[in-house]
Image (cartoon, rainbow, N blue to C red; front, side, top):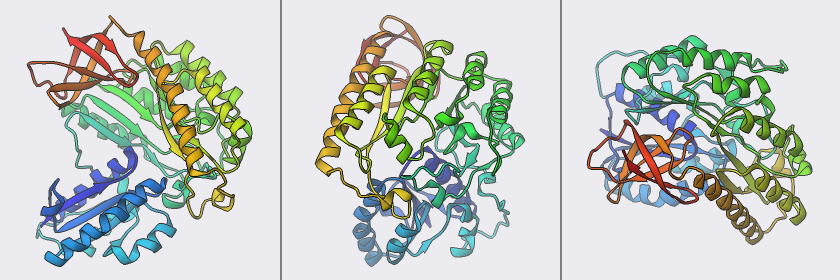
Length: 425
């Protein structure tokens, strides 16, 4: 029987899906990218944003029609709030916690007689990597921050960090297999190694991990996402340029540029502290690109408070931002607040903010004109090849060779807000 993975959400959901694929493959199922071929559909979902949940509802009728024509089993897993699980129970054959993917063989009839063992810790399941050159490596899961708008602590639980040796062993194998890009994942990646109930004023466990990965022999880029500003210490910032495999790219979620809104979000930093951190990053990491997450229309956000977010965005000069209109997530503290910013106004604010970031992104990209950049080629579309620079900027170029998964050099000849164009050397 063939299975299809329907993935919604962030990179962590893709990493989850890679582990689900391993379990299903060992159970005797065969993966397909075509839904119509599948006898099993596994949805790896995310309750963090309503838009992701809405996409599932948009597929339900299609799956129901498929079930009338053939036997089809549907499973929901991932990062799903209890509220969403309750509503979706009638649409799926099984709903399981992502940490319990080892139970899949007992839910499904194994199609192979080959004995196999699965670790009780789902992060120890060796992934079925989607790419042959870029690997997502979760180093921790869960979150202890309890931002008032966020579903993660209620879907993934409290923070748990993988042992350093386990992570290093996985990365060594990947590099030996020829992987060129390692992306460390965590809901709060720079709190790696923190223990429950303890207050940390440094990043020693995370810095130790970065040093150990940097010492792994071989040519590869190292990135890590997503950082929390409260854990982005001066020690961490200053060690980054000393570890040559770490790329000059920092994803630093702001979420809001107004101190009162940050307090309501339970984000324990001020805009002044955030801007000081950005200053330190730019002074210490040459050529760094900074991206962010921002929510517009949080309950109670006034037009003046939104203007404060615009001011911060203009000061930071972001290279890119993931913008979201606030959506109520049942069970989170913010759900008790009145969602009083109209949808039309949220859309307006998102558009205005995007225009500001678009200008700063173009300004930053123009600085790269006529420079030679190293590019990791990762795809082809409409007759062009695409890749990314070390600071995570998309580059488009012509080439007579298929070099997907390889490092190449290119001279930047054109700059747009979200994309560069290069001439390959």
